[in-house]
Length: 143
Image (cartoon, rainbow, N blue to C red; front, side):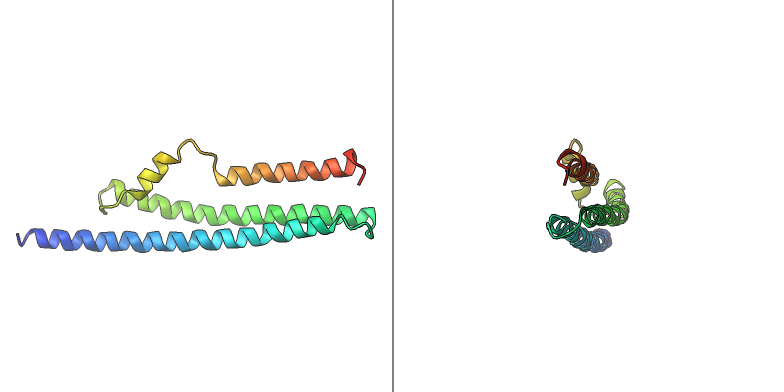
């Protein structure tokens, strides 16, 4: 029985380390989304302001391009933060697969989300659509 106690203590220590890394990953995710959403909101506000009829057509175009560039910057920051998050998730997954913890959260999440579209890809596709919408406004509608 005394030989099981050190093993149980070691398992608890490893689980605690896992949970600390997981907590860091969760905080990082929150920060990533907060920063990205800030830039997306600024982008959409500037884009909306570009429709003010008191502005010249050149100024409207400049504002629309600036809005799109700000959106792209938000996507860039989101991607940078995501790469660090991927490192943390990979580390958690390695801890799970090497039995350094009793948790298997990352393996279950990866299994469940295998077929889903990644958020990064969605944001890039939306950015392309955003740019196409700007071109349609310029050339299709004459705004």
